[in-house]
Length: 302
Length: 310
Picture 1: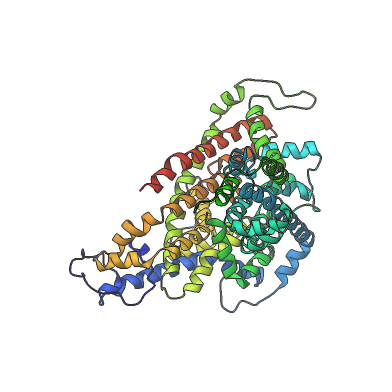
Picture 2 (picture 1 turned 120 degrees about the vertical axis):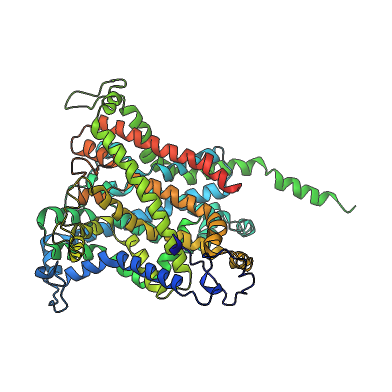
């Protein structure tokens, strides 16, 4: 457990008073000049863990850009190729799957933004009867997510006659308790004076929302958008259940069908397909790393 | 004269708005909430209630409608060894994944927050699994665990350890899935610890250091207690994830061998969409909902209080 303990320090100079009183064996590196082993071990541990964590992606890259003969055979002079990507692309309707996922993610996010903004505004600024109970009922969805209600939601979709459509994949997620909660917190922090000033000018509730609240919440919208897009780009179980044709399947379901039936165990092609499906998110993440991390952070702090 | 009638009148207006305004607040509030409320009720509250109702009926077959069967489904469930297996697996899975993920994510956050060599790489590496689809990475892990030529066996082979069918043998299959789950989520939870650490005042640790406290002591008595709200948040999310996410099971083991890796939701999925026994699937879902309800209650009643009053 002692590897856990590199306590963060923002300042360089820390007085070395009181070293004599310290219990032996528990001192940090800055208090005992001769002890360099602790931090070195810790750094080594951190690096080991980081290498293990990146290994799956590194392997996928290796297998995807080398011929199949080298997929489990690691030598430095293995020839490079892009053929695996071409083979994967041609072996399944990935273009269609990309389009489906793009439509799905856009549809969900657009609806979520509108619905959650309206609901959050109601909770933050309107004193209506039953508000607190309604809010608790909304928060219930944080615990009982649509992912566990697959049986009944499938039945509902059949009754509505929309099984195997893209809206059916998105519908259970569109009124997102998480989005409502996040935006409500943000709207509540907007000074009431701004709101009242706009109303004095004669603006109605929707105008105030659009002119005052929405612009001020822009960073939260970006954060929520990134989290929502990555969640639904990666979502699998519900789309697997509710779709059964090429024209509706998102990438994750398409990839699974491709990997489990079409390919046997050709790792090169499977890893190429895997990288292709993850590429848009991965590239976006590598380019905007800071925004991604900050968005996930912002979305998580309550 | 100082407190004239004018300010007093203003105060009273602010305290009780005229009835006309209040009435419009009712209408506006509910109208704004309505679209989201309709969808929430249709796809969260209604199905949750319908699940409970359906668990007391039989599965409709062909032209035969569902009939009320009382607690028959529950009786069948109690006698179903696969249910007990899945529940047991899920408990073992949760009890391993949750503490491991939390410990690792905390370690990662402390490393990445401190002055460590190669910090950008570490952060990138820890966080990357979060943005990758579970379904995609499960396929890569499948190769790691492949018997004989898989990466794990190749590496262990260097030390003369014989090949092993990791996902095919009952003793190791669940462990393999636990590793994947920890790998996937630790970087995600790291972010929340990192955010909390960055908001923490460095003076606290410095003051303790001046008093001669060691780093382990500082961590145990200052950092960790101050991180308690974050730990609670991470804990709740980790618990929910351990019941909600079964993508890797669909890809890697399909619940096998001999149901050793069947988790509760995976069994629900199998019963509901492979055997099409919807009434029994609803009964199993009730158990899952009850577990989640206990988590929710625990959060509100016990943990919240302890952490705030410490």
